[in-house]
Length: 418
Length: 178
Image 1 (cartoon, rainbow over the protein chains, first blue to last red):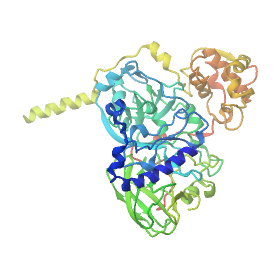
Image 2 (tube, one colour):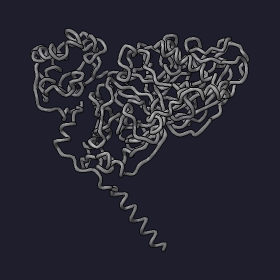
Image 3 (tube, chains in turn red, yellow):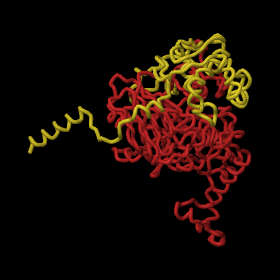
Image 4 (cartoon, rainbow over the protein chains, first blue to last red):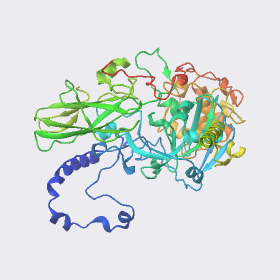
């Protein structure tokens, strides 16, 4: 982990230096290009100067990378709203991705239906399709007091253009029972993860996706087929999908009990809701962010970040550069899709004094991203103990992430201070 | 022309009402459904296969198939604790979830290798270790759902009928403007 952090710190500095060295044609020409590699030519690789990569969740370093919880997106290097497929976050729930030959893969839809059907991948490709841009976010994605970088704290969210068939199309093909209130669906990995979803959502906008940013979904994100439940915590979006069953009630699979119920922290007499659905309105400044550096002292800098909400489109983003006293509306850089990352920018003139910068999201339902103290007050927990697993409300934690700026321009996580 | 258009709209709306079918996908065989139909309805357990297993059987199986990772008596080792606070015994509301998870996902790397009888036996042993059923108990498809889990009332019923597309979140966090 330490190595990765050091590498990232170097990269940050390296990227900032690039503007200076670009003019030096001699230096670039003297270096052997890696474009002689067949792989790089046939399936375009990136410049050797670009080395941004996923990292393991900091809690998981003792476990196998890529099998357990976190492979975190390097948000600090992100541009626009689309996450490259190689960098899309993945939580693996204990399994490496199954090695599925799409010719052998099948999807069964059964239960409270007129016709139990089996679809091959070829069948699915013949059905009407949609392409939509949606984020995915793990419900455990949140500010972390001990996590120095935005990748470590917020890297469990990514955004892609997903292509596939609407679940409603498949349900209609099978002739679903109008009395059915739920669907359950299951993956093909060794643990065969199962999830329950209200039928109303299944019929609304849920996708059975086979495409991710213009190519087949990557193995770690569910190749060849996955569920995509826009705006809901990413647990709903089961990967390596092989079965959909139309049922009359939720089934309470393992992951639905063990980790993904959010218990109201206020009082122990409050009971646990079975499930949670939408992610709250959220945003984070991706640059400048923790462990980065304002390289050239006082002057103009571009504050840039991502905002999203399970409640629909992002309506506006506000940025504060004085620790939350004054909030100014940020510029929206590109499209504002529903349940999608939305890129915001704000040009800021830093006067060289220590301060804290932060952003907050307001979505189309006028839900406002809360501060740490507001969040703690709502859940009835000690704000100085947020977020911990013991203090309930640690999941679906959407409070504001501040970044502190030191006089020397170094940026640090100031969540515990603000 | 007007009439022609009108009748075209009429026909297409009739087709809509009956449900468009693309005639894609083949009819699923009962055998292939049965093989994959492994999630257990916590209400009636209708997907449970026939089988039986006792606490005593489960204790022996546990020693050979589970103990190495989950520790003696389920106290936990490299794999999570199975007995006591914040485990299946104290937290899970339905015995069906225990059966379903052992059946689908255990033992790690040998998933699906247990027979139905073995899954009933292991479920019985773990429920006994959690003080929920007596040592003399035997579980079958007929009585698994009769097991009363201590936390069976510990979960708020899912607010399914409250959910509508585009509505505000059910468990809303209060923002600065409230």
